[in-house]
Length: 445
Image 1 (cartoon, rainbow, N blue to C red):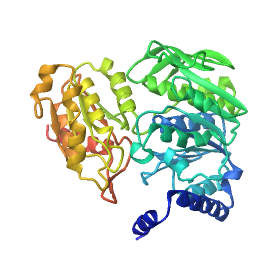
Image 2: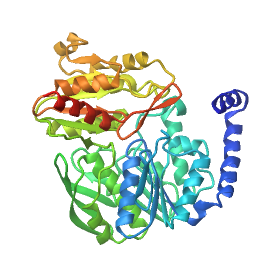
Image 3: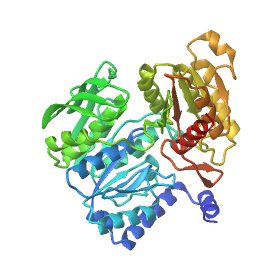
């Protein structure tokens, strides 16, 4: 009933009026819960990719330094280290839920609140009236054009996080939008970047916080960390170049908030992986299985390019795309999978109210043009790529194909514990499903 009412109102009230009403709603909800945001030091991270991981790393660095922290992300809601799953499929919660959780943080004695903040939430005024003391920008890549229509509008929505004179501003110097985000005033500003051959030519020169001499393994990464407060060699139990970038953003935020450099570097060595982000599933099988949340072209390419050099055998990719979201990215996802993987299986992800078959066909439409080998591209479906709508069946086929040294990469849902079908949230978790399939295979031996 609530959704029907909202739909009717959207058709009869202008978007400007709706946004104004949301400002009023946000103020009322803040008042109802005693303006909890004013009693917390709010940290916000925005960007297309890496928001969730960066928030988790900021939270871990603060907690390791002895601070009490509340956190709201796509994956989890935590209070002083006690976590519960975020089963809403909303990155930034609705206004009422947001202020309700901020109140819980205050009641638990938290000093900080780390809030993953999306362009939707900023544009819709869900976080209106909340002052962010520290803000971070990870990157801006192809996503959410179903909502924002253009990349320019998408960027403007994210800029709102930086527009209220934060005390600390941290910006990815390797992103083309860096100059715009840096143009907003802040008491302290830090840029960060990775100094290696993959750094784009248009990146800002001389970032404040850098990583260089990267040495990457399948489960670890070491690098030289340089900041205005000191430099040192660090090693962390996390893989991936993109992970290093997220950690650099977290370093900038925590340095800006006054956490000593020495404490931060000690804590980096203890960082824990984020659920569903490059998460390995190992039940003793002779091949690797990795679950990751990557669902945008940029994120998917980063995951593929990170894994490909480490794969001893064949790379088997399982992917899909969410319904009721940006359709233009779907063939790009298929092309990327075909470019990097030996075998590709396109499946259901979160169809929402769209026809699942149509989504799968749109992703699959990009597969032939992504294959480097023209002869292989001509072979078509059921030779090196398949469309399998049932996600469990698709994952089962990928695992069944895997041989010693191969890697099965399952992307799109990561650590989520629900799947959106129609308007219903159905229990689903990729890692759990993988474990069930492996256990069944082991029992049949």
